[in-house]
Image (cartoon, rainbow, N blue to C red; front, side):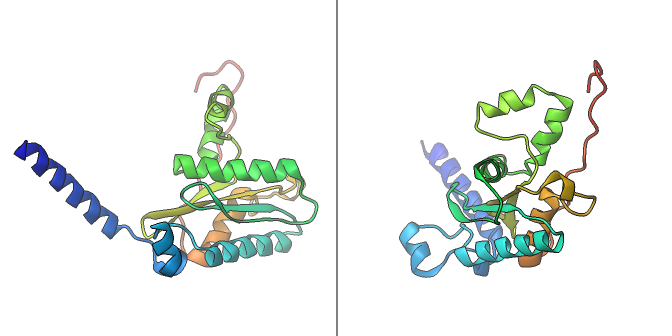
Amino acid sequence: MKIAMGISLAAALLLSASAASAQAPQQFTIGGAAAEELHDRISINADTAKRIAEAAEAIARKNNSRMVVVILNPYGLVVHQHAMDGEGWVSINATQQKARTALLTRAPSKLLANRNIREPFTETHMAAYALTVQEGGLPIIVGGQLIGAIGVGGIPPAQRNANYDEDKCARDALIAVLGPQPPLPPDVAPQAAGQRP
């Protein structure tokens, strides 16, 4: 009994120490009375989410494009959503799925898109978990702490290029507001028919 309690106490201390070492800067997360009321100090705040969305829209405009951006908190709730003129239900819904996929997998949604290229059954398999195999979703991690997720969608295929697509728009918007971000996953070439990955 004492050994079990000692192990539990040691585990709790270890968890609290690792949680304390991985904290997002307070200017990006909710604080004050809102944090006290919700018992939450890790969610992206509305101001940061809005600034990221504005940065994504500026990137789209610079590329003569339009887009949808959705930003979720770590619990999957929408903190900010914006669709530029000309975006409809499909683009908005797909963008929400991208953000949710990045949040739940804690990884860029492009990893599942790449996996689907190599293993085409992935799309059906992931749909059972309400995950998408479309690129454009990224987790938002600051100071080692996940504070939310972003989805960008609705960019017309004709306006995508080597420097601008949904992943790059999301990443560049995060860089503009939060600073350096991890590199994006590389593109994966489709497998030849009958060739195993």
